[in-house]
Image (cartoon, rainbow, N blue to C red; front, side, top):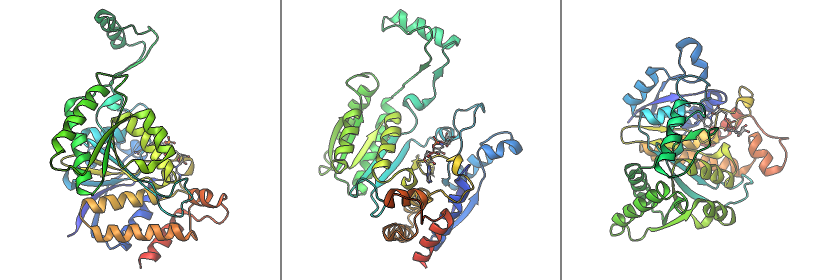
Length: 365
Ligand code: NAD
């Protein structure tokens, strides 16, 4: 069945890696009709906003979208288009797998971690007050009046809300995923020893959800770990982890750490999933300094497309795509600059974005 998918190429390196991704997805035999929607910094001049309504309309209609990175513009009503898209579509799950690919030259070759990051709450909820604002003054007065503590007059303030509702649904998503994908363990990542009313609530509710699943999935071990200890253990031995479930900010940081364990941002795919729509995007940003130079690694977006193909149940194409990417990287004859440098210690002999994609397409045809 042909799937109509919204494609947002994005800013910076976005259009080049999106071209590479489209060619690989077609060669893998996926049955897709692209609904291309431009968004980002480069549409502001013509449309007055980086995120025109037509883009959201298209995602709402198609229910599945894939996007390249978008540069965060300064001063356009919302802080980040990426955060705004997740908010508007209530895409509460941010799924970030880190899976070793042989031949990347990464520090580890046996990482297989899937990170679930809550996408709508925590410090990323965007409730912030400039140090000189009336809101900050009112909050300072309120905090002082409650006797909870004092906030200096020259402090900006960000609010960290974590709800039972938000925690319950991200933990359920992680448990459901663990069951459906034969995973062995779910680790709840937190800092509940210090932030008792936010991370403490998160830990308590996540454990309650785990208890609901105990009968149905007794084979899945559930543990919890403080975020700092999690980072240390990830570096010492990443194989001790399987599925991680994190509040928003820790998830952002820990997922980059996991990307580093498997070879860097050029290899890290991601997905934002809600109950009515899913938006697939790599972890990395628009890498403006590399834009237009045919130097970016398209692997992260290509593996993001693999996640998308699995979501729409085109598993054969997804399997073919994964095998072709793995083979090309393992062979090491056509590697992008970042991969070549990590594996061979030099960029001499590296190939461009499109030549790398050509090698994957050749593997598929
Ligand atoms: P970045 O991810 O663009 O770059 C970080 C580093 O990784 C740079 O050295 C870059 O060259 C390298 N890199 C990133 N992607 C790569 C690839 N595919 N191949 C090879 N190297 C790659 O992060 P940044 O510089 O902090 O952000 C640049 C812009 O992107 C900012 O405006 C930021 O807000 C935006 N951003 C967007 C998203 C998104 O669209 N989801 C995510 C992160 C950042």
